[in-house]
Length: 366
Image (cartoon, rainbow, N blue to C red; front, side, top):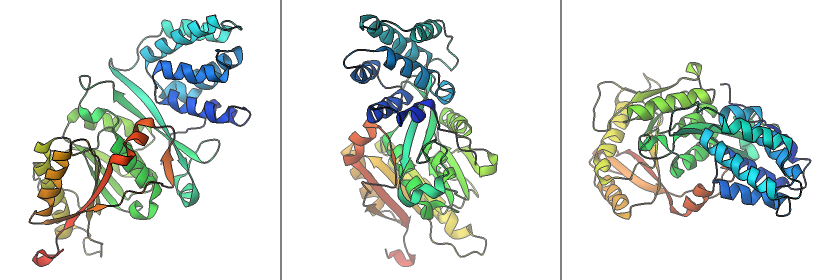
């Protein structure tokens, strides 16, 4: 699989800068389209409280004009607002506005929105340490990080709930990238695939096949586009499909592993979710393997606890389910792969939960 390259001028310039850590944080913030005031605060900290000429040159050259960023960090309105704030800050500085920033300001003010109104592209960067380094095939200049780019809608009115970034999905992608042995060579189905970050992660660790499903046609189409954006093609045996949990389709996939993230947001979704997990597990038990010896399939559901009542309902219904057994799994706090400067995920980590669901043994014994 061709992984989307993550090497950039920003990364290359870090080694020569006395402000390495701050510049790297700013780079990650820029890729995630962080709020303009936060960006400006970090940038002026590099210039001793001012947007110096040196900082202006770095912003334009290493961030805005970097080829990777130009093609993956896309939001015309955001860049207009950022350039306007930078221009105003530069005017107040001792160095004034550099020609490079002035040119960029003019270009951004005249830019035409290329993506759909209300949509953008963001990039998240992950760091790789230890034994995970060898299997991810990272292409960053430092050899120890990779990127995932996603097209997203700005708000709930611009797209379905699946077209946004959800913290549990990014944690589950982090978990997949950190656990090669658990997913390499496995047939995987994702329920509620959303923007596709978990699907990209499964492709990168070498899953035998990946089926990314969602009940929203818009989310499925967006996930498919995001897979292509990250270099995941048909040759990677990764595809998308519309799947409503209450349906009971004939045939269907026979996964080794079922994954889902941030699915427990509505109590009305609990029964359909358990139904979908059950028929997928039963399908694998009845038809999977075609004579091969395969370990029993299991489902992993990652959740950021938002609604205690819905979580309690899920655990109660799963516990008394006729065909399923469920248990909480300890959530690893430190993993071989982790996201850089993802503040929303860091804030959510204390509320992360992981449930494993499997079929009950014959006779109802756990």
